[in-house]
Length: 394
Image (cartoon, rainbow, N blue to C red; front, top):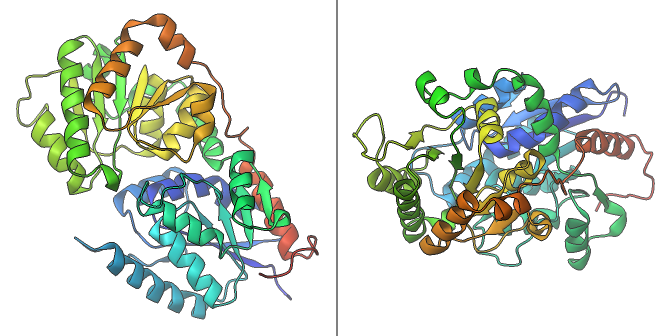
């Protein structure tokens, strides 16, 4: 090749940045690889926060997000911009992570340019194209474009095999989110109250109080689903006045609308339920600290389903299906959907029944040992330097 192979990591959202950060750091430290980073800006402020945490400076920022942009408009913009970018930069390998519009667009454009693609977190499936939407379609389509598949678990590998992906192209590596979590815990150790991004008096009040951490952003829950989630939180806050309910609210107006209308904002509209704390999205280190501080977590996030078992935190997932069944099977995660009554019932059980709580609050991590990035980078290096001769381009 005459030079070190050029690997481009393309990402656009906060979860992608979290999960690719350990891989990018490992690529940049590798003596045989020239690593470059391109961001689409699909999540603007939330993406930049994570990059700052890990000291990653993009080589290219396409800055694609526009107000009220549809998925179709974002996809068209991403394909067009990435096409020009790859034409100019001519990467030798493209690495993407997960199931966003950025991931699918980058994989498609790389295929058009005959550039091999590696897919980090490959093989997650619900088996239902509209749950989550559009993520399930994005990851299925990406799997049939990618050349190398980095599956977090054996379950993910089996999903890919069922879809006809060649076994020699699939590598079970663990999930890089565990690598990112371990790096973050090292940075926040002994500094919890300073990074939690809550008023100091609130931090002191919560030092011993039970804390329920809440996140939500899935498109399939927009409308009635989020209304039910908010009603459940309101009921729980009334029933458990000594429990603190902390909700960093996603920036999407389809989330913020029902959350602020039903739950109010404690410091702005005089919400009578003083144990509900609505925050703007937190920097990643602050969120990890808050997750580590929490008693239990209510979420629809995929990453939190993977991180929380390492921290021994029970998770109630506000979705009807999950592409991460391993933690459900191990008993540390339970599905409750957006059913108001079920959310209230299962949360109340964990807050009142110590035996039920202890059954879920086990530090059990089916998603990896914190060395996934190291494995992925070595496989990419072997592939690019001809040390995996069995693998020809798709």
